[in-house]
Image 1 (cartoon, rainbow, N blue to C red):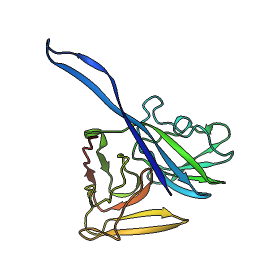
Image 2: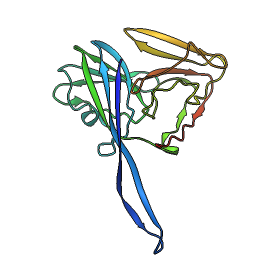
Image 3: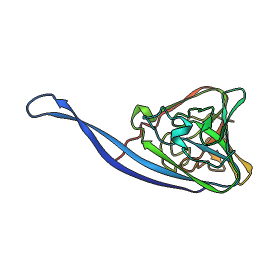
Length: 201
């Protein structure tokens, strides 16, 4: 799975005047991420926040192949949504939520939205099995990104039709490096907080 990322900073407005000489600005960073899909199953994740739609499928992936299917893991089982001109049902995927998409032909999905920063880029992780991705559109090893792993925790990527496992024994072995917009399974013995506190410089 190949990804391309373009970010552009946009000043969305002046929040107000505090004094005659001080102003507060609201600066959001918006952009898009292209995620290339191969025929069959792909494990991807929403890397941006599309606040205009509550991150529903009809906005995140407005066009797809007839019969393409998305699978969302709810903690115990999968829910599915099929594309027949629109997605039915119109599932939502928050930033950092991973999911499978099955496509008949190679395609490119373009995610559009805001880059989450500060505390909004942090993520709570459950004990047990979960399906996630990074909330930050940045290709970086989980070790370097401060992923909260304990001895024996593991992650699983689904690439080229097969799973690739990485186990944590002080560091991930082999190195676990999710691509931008790539989803992955996490198996954790205990809950954790993935504190990125990401800021666009």
